[in-house]
Length: 375
Image 1 (cartoon, rainbow, N blue to C red):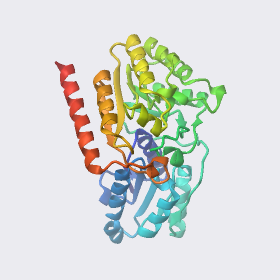
Image 2 (cartoon, rainbow, N blue to C red; image 1 turned 180 degrees about the vertical axis):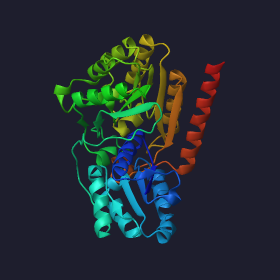
Image 3 (cartoon, helix red, strand yellow; image 1 turned 30 degrees about the vertical axis):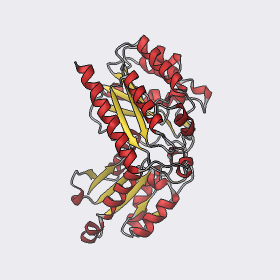
C-alpha cells in the first residue's frame, strides 16, 4: 500500500507533511513519488495567496480520472485552505471523489479518520474551530540534514492582508521542556546538521505562557545542549525583535548568522494600513544593530507590492529601503485578496498590471544589488 503527499506553502506545512507521513507509515503505507501508483493521496494545502488555492483546486480536480480507475484510492485534503469552512463546503460539493477533508486543528485525528473511511466507505468532512497542541504526533523527517522543530503555533498579529490567524488560530507556545527533549533526541540521532525552529512569529514565543520564558532564553537553552549542530529559526516579526535576541545570536556559534526579517513595505503609510506595528525607522535600527554585532549576517525579507492604496511614491520608498539594506535575498509577492481579511474591503485596490510592473522592477533591483555584491 502506497501513499503520496502533495505539499503547498510554507515550512510549517512541509513539517506537517512529515507528521502526516509518520501517521500513514504507522498505518502500514509506504511512500511513492509516483502519484498514479498511490493508494492514498494527501493534499496539504496553503491559503496565504489566491494562486496557491487555485493550484490546489486544479490539481485536486485532475484526480477525477485516477479515482475512476482505482475505486479504492483514498483522497485526503487538509491544511490551511480547508480550515476555512466555506472552502471545505465548496470542496465537498465540487469534488465528490474526495474522501476526507479536515483543517489544521484536527490533523491529530487523521489516523482514526482513515480507519473509519476504510471501514464504512463514507466520505468525511470535519471542522474544528480551534485546537490544542498534540505532542503525541511524531514526524518522518524528510528534509535532508535539516530537522524542523515547531516551537509555537498560530498568530496574534492580524496583519490586514493575512489569513493565518483565522486558519491557524491564536498563538500557542509549546512547553520548553518538550521542545528541548525533541531537540536532544534529534542531536542524539546524529543525522541532522541543522535544526530550524518554526513559528508564525518565533519572537513572540512564551508571550501566551510566561512560565516558558522568552524566545532568546529558549535559544540559549538549545545552544547549551551538547552536540555538533547549527541552529536557525523562522519567521521573525520586527516589532518583537529585541536586543536580547541580537545578543544571543551574536554570542553563540551554534546559531547561524542569518535572519529572515519580513519588512513587507518601505512606506510607513502602507505599514500602518497593514497593521505591522513598526516604522521603517525602527526596522532600520534593528538592521543597524544586527550588523553592528554580526557584520556578515545574511539578511532576507518578504515584500508585498500592490497593497491597497500603495502609490508610486510608496513603492519607490520600498525600493529605496531595498537599496539601503542590500538584502541577500528578497521574496517579493503581489498583494492577493484573502476573504475575511480587513484588506479585502479596503478602497483603492491596485490593478494587476501595476502589480506586475512593480514586482518585476523590484526583482530586477534585487539582481542588480546581488551583482554589485559579487563584484
